[in-house]
Image 1: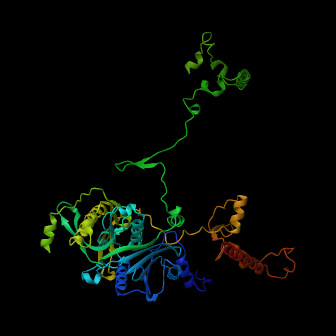
Image 2 (image 1 turned 30 degrees about the vertical axis):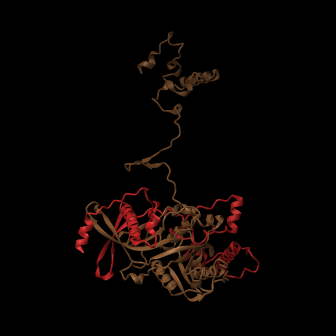
Image 3 (image 1 turned 135 degrees about the horizontal axis):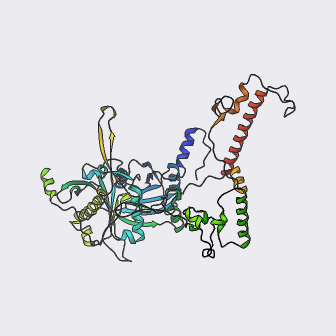
Amino acid sequence: MIRTVKPKNARAKRALDKKEPKMVENTKQALFVTGKSSNQVLHDAMVDLGALKKPDLKRFNKRNEVRPFEDAEPLEFFSEKNDCSLLVLSTSSKKRKNNLTFVRTFGYKVYDMIEMQISENYKFLSDFKKQTFAVGLKPMFSFQGAAFDTHPVYKQVKSLFLDFFRGTTSDLQDVAGLQHVISVTVQGDFEDGEPLPNVLFRVYKLKTYKSEQGGPKLPRVELEEVGPRFDFKIGRIRSPSPELEKEALKRAKQLEPRTIKNISSDDMGDKFGTIHMGKQDLGKLQTRKMKGLKPKFDQTRGDSETEDYMDDDEKDLQGGAEESYGEDFVTATDIDVEPPAKRFKK
Amino acid sequence: MSSIAEEKKSLPVTVEKAIPVSYDLGNLAVFDSNSLDRNDLDSSNAQREKHIKDVTRENVQLMINQILSLPIKSTTESAGGTSGQSASMTLVQLPDPISELPREKPLPKPKAPTKWEQFAAKKGIQPKERSGKMVYDEDAGQWVPKWGYKGANKKLDSQWLVEVDDQPKKAGDELIDPRTLSRAERKKVIKKNELQQKRNLKGAK
């Protein structure tokens, strides 16, 4: 752990704030560490891998004695000090010749490690002598081999290469920026128990031609190898513990897209809205207003209320009203006896 | 060069695959799980590089077809500043990345609640509705800020005549200018708030 002191000025505070965990993360920075036993081949290889990662990288020039599988603490220190979460360490020994150790960190602690040894038939960017890709462009990826979906080791390799080279994440991509592709291939299918086949790392530049079949929209794609070309032999591996993996793959709840309720669209792109309404109370429905339909004339009420309306009528009469409710009102039993002539006239 | 272009014109843009490839267009990646022959890819095979390139080309062709069928957004961006030239860019709208990649650092921790927020939660006090910075001044007949420059809380400071209470709030304040007292009161509140802020920050760590 690096001792953190309280920042004394605004610049130092900004620098520390920049290192804080963020909801939307910055592009992962790579740190290329030269090991004690590194050599020229590894140096050139790291330069070429750096060319693909530019500008999100840092490079160490001095050699460092690090044995990541025995003690990863120096790498964790480098990671924290430089705020880099992707580390590449170069070492070469009799047992593991031209070895690159790819380390990923999570919260400045080692997340996973994988050793990859460069086989003899490597070719660097300078060997191709071709016009290469522009700096800082997002590469495309092409992974060939079923093992990338099934085998845990190759899954890790896939995750590593995607994480390492994908650069900035953005939802808009310039079509003209689709210039190069990183191709990662498993050297043939294999059964369980067999030695792990190599991982073939190639970089191609895209060339597009107008095609009669594709019309104006789809071009014919051709590739031209620009290097670097590496055949990686897989060495020792350290995979993340399930708890660490779960923690690292967590996504911020705030960033998840909100579920839009009650709005849908069909295949034609027409938008539909669903409206939820309460059940209508038909008892309160307002129909044509008539005097006889007033609730106070409801027959379902008790006897005491019928007396009430009788009283009301009497008051009305006293008030000098010409029309009286008493005469208007007709009950089913009354009809035969006394037809309500006055009411119908009105 | 033109002869090459002519030659490519008749070549197909579609690719047939035994197992359909899967895409992660957010990361511009294509995953091909078709079987690969070990002999084709053996380092002793002279046709090895050509084979890798052909397989990759097919996959890239498939991906390019996919990418170009995504919704396109064209923008014109003035480049070169003074020259007034503008270049149009064709941007493709990519979907969100699908591949699960580990984060660099853990998710940021939520801010610790202040002492007031803790108290309010315990008592069930809802935050007051914000009514804005301006308040209506009945005497002047206009809207003035509650605080700050010409703020409503500084009303006393600019009065040429101030009424003095018969009974001062604190003993010994009789002979002090009420304007100074009101100013001191404001400053005291600010000090207190700063102290509380500091205490909350300390408690959060």
